[in-house]
Amino acid sequence: GAVVSQHPSWVICKSGTSVKIECRSLDFQATTMFWYRQFPKQSLMLMATSNEGSKATYEQGVEKDKFLINHASLTLSTLTVTSAHPEDSSFYICSARAGQVEGNTEAFFGQGTRLTVV
Amino acid sequence: AQSVTQLDSQVPVFEEAPVELRCNYSSSVSVYLFWYVQYPNQGLQLLLKYLSGSTLVKGINGFEAEFNKSQTSFHLRKPSVHISDTAEYFCAVTTGRRALTFGSGTRLQVQP
Image (tube, rainbow over all chains, first blue to last red; front, side, top):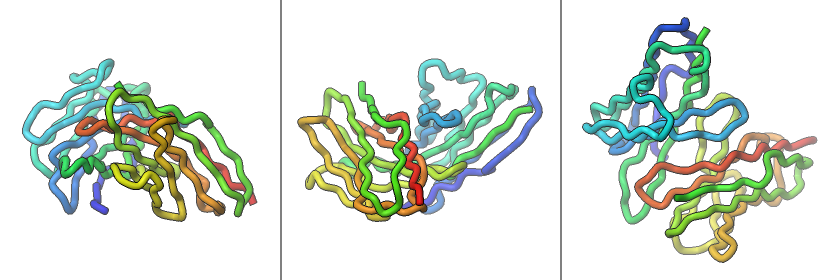
């Protein structure tokens, strides 16, 4: 299957600083990328959907000014957690989809980023 | 709106025994269904998917699932589990271009 690379796999940052997480589709062009957040022992919660070249669509309750998403190219999306606080500590996962071909909507997932804010 | 319910948060099972992880969904339109496995601190790996056609879907690692439209279910099965199958399993649904909606997950714990 297609490969999605997420970097870094883990990061520790000080409270008040910003952290950028990258999500790259290595062997396909991702027209749509999704960002999820996962708390310990819980499911994945969709944060936002981004289409290349346009503004991201955020889910209700997700602060767009805090979680900045950029999808400037067909192979790269970034999530920047601005002014991070300990409550932002979580596991962040991206997924990428090449597009809808005859109903095939499979999305490929990155390996996730463990963010710890101290 | 679409939703997914995974009825069991944890399923303990002995090695080489069969297992079934249950998944029910709710949607007013046709859906595509997926099962993913997640190992600790890792992303999700696709086990299998149902898009159309045969309702019995075979996936990787010996897993299979059956789509039952009348019961709105997509249960995951494996006839004989291994220790290495210990992981978190997520059922997910999408109606098309939208993102996947995930169930709450089922922790499969395989015991020797």
